[in-house]
Length: 313
Ligand code: AMP
Image 1 (cartoon, protein in one colour):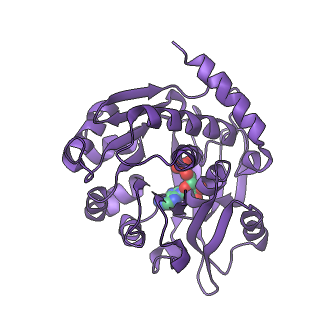
Image 2 (cartoon, rainbow, N blue to C red):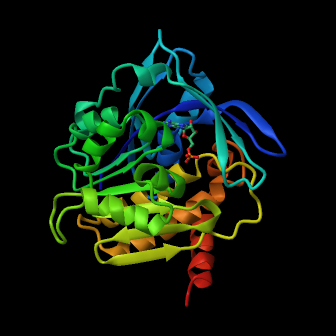
């Protein structure tokens, strides 16, 4: 089933307590599309500038399952660039810089052939842009978005308008707190569902909120109840950047591969989030997309089995 992602493609600089990497490939849509490509075809819509290294473009175009016809190169613009520094616990980070570049310009153009997309993931970018892109997919059956502190702080109104039009929201626990003022992630997610959710069983309004808690796993707050998943107990954590987008790629890739319709059942979402958890656990083993680059489907299947065994109660 046609899955599409719109978001950022970035040039990242990442500093961890023990290492660092400069000018590496990153971006919300990048991590998402590579993770989702393990489950089926994914259409990518994003813009980059003239400074985008050809090797990065070649890398993305090298994936048969990623349709890059929506990758727009603007020769006179600059690619989005982001820098982040992880704290000692590797679970929290501070943003060093955000250079919007193409993000401050018009949204990327959606190729006409992508208009029939059914599964839509609006990866992190300005919520006004997310909303505009969402309207390009009139045949969508499931629309999920991600957001982050920058947009909660600077584009709250647009974010609220977006939440009224989508089915699911994925965000970090600290972002849920920032958005609602509620410290408890369950309370915060319930507030979001109360404020932006439709009636139970209705096709309109937010139906679920996924709160990511880094190494503490994730929660799915849904009309029918709550699901809680631990993180995969990883021994090797080199760079957590993109874990959230890789999680979302696994989650949406799984849902699209199953043709899951909205309103999506809590049990289906739990299975999808388990897949997202497994994908994220691989991504954090190396900088940039270096681990996803070498990942094999058999490794995903093996770790999924291990994870299912671990959480079997
Ligand atoms: P994550 O670790 O899952 O939150 O994703 C980090 C990725 O998102 C990095 O590769 C960045 O290039 C990208 N990123 C950072 N800040 C933003 C932002 N404000 N909007 C969109 N993408 C961002």
